[in-house]
Length: 380
Ligand code: SAH
Ligand code: SF4
Image 1 (tube, rainbow, N blue to C red):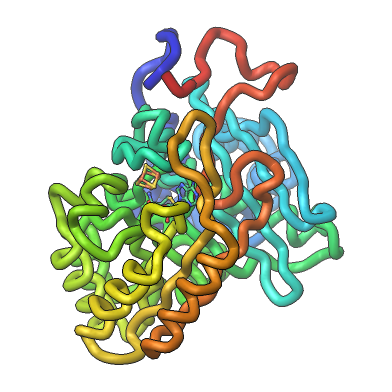
Image 2: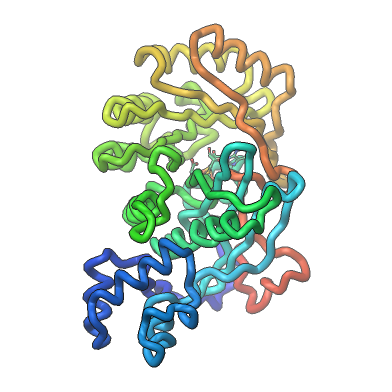
C-alpha cells in the first residue's frame, strides 16, 4: 500500500534491455539509423556493462547522445547502500522513474558472488511474516528494470568495487521483493538475457539462476516448459494445508499437494533439484512433527529430487512470529537428514543490515533524501 499518492502512473520508458534483438534493430531503423547499430549498442550494454554513450566511439558522434536518450534511459538510480560482512554484502536501495523504491543485495562468498534481485515493487501475496508482503503490490518491474539491477552488480564485481578485489557476478536469485510468477513474462525474458552469452546477454549460466515462488502452480508449470535449466525454489514454510493456509495465503488457491506435484514435475522436466524454502518460526512450524511430516510429504515423490533450505525467520517489526531456538533448528535438520532428505540451513547474510536477501522491503532511510514527494511505500 502506498503512503500517499503522487506516483506517476504508467510504465517506465522502453529500454534496449526490453527489446528483442529484432525489435532493437527495427527501432534503430525507425530512427533513421542502420540496423547493425543495435548490435553495437547491445555489445556495449551486455558485453561491457556500459551505458555511457559518450565513450561509444564506434557510433556516429553526432547521434550518440540521441541513441543514449532513446535506448538507454536511466531506469534505476541509487538512493543509498549499506554494507555488511566486511564489505562482502552490499544492499542497495534504488529509486525508479515513478518514485518507487526497490532493493537488491549482492553477497560475495569465497567461490561465488550472488545477487538477490526484485521482480516487483512490493508484493501482493500478503505472507504475514514477510516485510515485503506488508507493502502490498505497487507494480511489476519491466524487464529492463530487472536487468539493470544485474548489470550494475556485474559491473561492481568486475571493477573491484566489492571487498575482495575484481571478480565476477556468478549467481542471480529472484528472492528480493515480489513474486516472480506474478510478473512472469518480464522475469523469463530477463532470465534469458542474464544467461545469454556475452554481447547478447550477461553470460551468467542459467544453472546459476534461481527463481523463488510462493507456489503459483500455473507459473511453475509454465516455467517447466521453457527449457531453461534454472533452479526453482518453492517457499513452502509448512508441511500441511492447515498451517500453510495461515502462513501463506496463496495456499488457499494452490494447496500443498498441488504445489508439491508441480515442483516434482519441474524436477522431472528439468532434472534440476528443487529447493524448498522453509522459514523456521518459533513454536509454529519448527517442531519435530513438522519436520517428520515434511520429510514424509517429500519422500512420497521419491529420492533425491529436492533440497530443503530452512532459514531462521528474520522477524519483522510488530509481527507475532519470532525465530526458532537454535536447538529446534538443529533438531529440525536432524529429522530431515535421518529421513534421507538433503537440507542445509540457509545463511542469513546481511541480516544485520535490516533485511537479508529474501526479506527485502524498501522503506525510508532517514536523511537519505528519498522521502521527498511522499512517494515512499510504507507498511500501513
Ligand atoms: N515471493 C517469492 C520470492 C521472494 S521472497 C517467494 O515468496 O518465494 C524470498 C524468500 O524469502 C521466500 O522463501 C520467502 O518466504 C522468504 N522470506 C520472506 N520473509 C522472510 C522472513 N521474515 N524471514 C525469513 N525468510 C523470509
Ligand atoms: Fe510476497 Fe514472497 Fe513475501 Fe510472500 S514471501 S509476501 S510471496 S515476497
